[in-house]
Length: 367
Image 1 (spheres, rainbow, N blue to C red):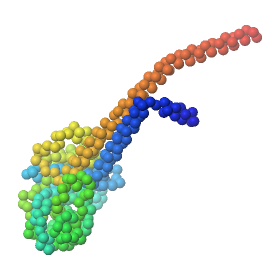
Image 2 (spheres, rainbow, N blue to C red):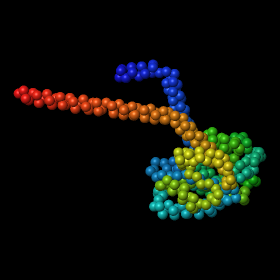
Image 3 (cartoon, rainbow, N blue to C red):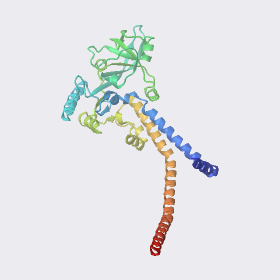
Image 4 (cartoon, rainbow, N blue to C red):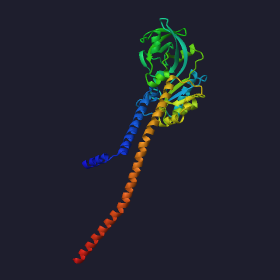
């Protein structure tokens, strides 16, 4: 061991400027590549809105996929369309011999439409705010942190409950502990079910823009705004074979010129490569889709993830080439050494064997 360390020390002491420069350059590139990979990991874990499949799966061995559907303006769905698709989905899963566990379900879904309403607190303060009318298990897909109260659920008997974001709560009431407080929206009576904090990740902060907002049932919003339709549909369902869930949705849930994406694979290497290939084109939206803030946040993290992946590969390229070149050189050197030395060793062994045989024969004659 001492001899090896001694040789290594002698080799290092013999480094010239070129060797030290190359060593420092390779070390810096490897550190930059590692930093890019660490940043990629941070970006991939930034959004909870793309983890619904993992959370729904729990500890089971069944593979699930999270699908998002975004419809163009004027081509939205109705709740009846959602109910019909659920029936189709049930039959398709039965055809694939996929059965729900007892007292459970094989899938969860959520949908929403959007609009602008006038909200008035119990003290008479009013504000024009963005409203998201939700249905299904919306807050499973988007588990906002509650500051007070509770979420609204798709199965609630009454649809006059609303969840305020913090900014709206402070603007209308000057407080966040508001569960049970009355208010009016577009002149209709509602009750505050809870107050939720917006996501605090860097992507959502950029995508949301800080406007105040209200979450209410889709049925209530559609009564307030008759031209409201469902512009976003989300689904978690079994995906026994990669692409099964997305293809099933594409074949049975028409979105026209809209988009159907698989959120559970948004950061897969193949998808990030597609993002890199579409660089520039992603900035142009010509299909009439207005994404909700959470999808804009995902698309932002996709761009960062694709950039960090490209940087990690780029920074690692030169060290990898350097290592490959040195490996080839070492292999060639070893081959040449073996080619020169092995025949010599063989010849010496043959000669020694011949001498031993002759010596043995000579001894036998002498006896």
